[in-house]
Image (cartoon, rainbow, N blue to C red; front, side, top):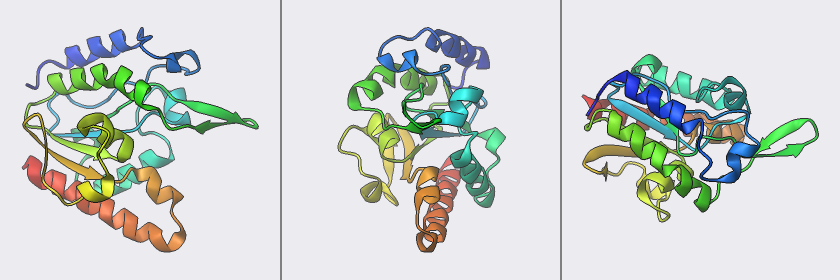
Length: 198
């Protein structure tokens, strides 16, 4: 549809008050999506990390830096894409003085799905959706989604073209010998999304 950017701001304000699951209790704030309402590519990650929870913006931490580099290498401007997460609050456990990411469970993903669907309703109907990792893919396509099986395949989400790929954090977690291969695959998948977006 690609309506007014004001609609995204209204949704973000509404999401601030969301109590559909318990994650809001320990999170610093809701981290809603960011980017233009006219975006032709929508990147969907798992959930905010520690840096995102503190900053209130998606993909601004270490995984965000990997994503920025991959977008640049795929000749995509970060400012031209809409970036969001399947879950809008940071789920974590303490480890010393650090807050360590915990994967959201199915109940939390389902509770947050209304916000993701609302974002997609505002964004252009033909925008290419990129699922970054298994949690995002399962939130979008259901619990049977697997990144390995989805990569390179032609996917569709409610009439939209879609691409499945790894989460940028997978590059950070990989052993040194795997890192370049994973990163190159991420760049290739983003490039395919760009081609689908025209």
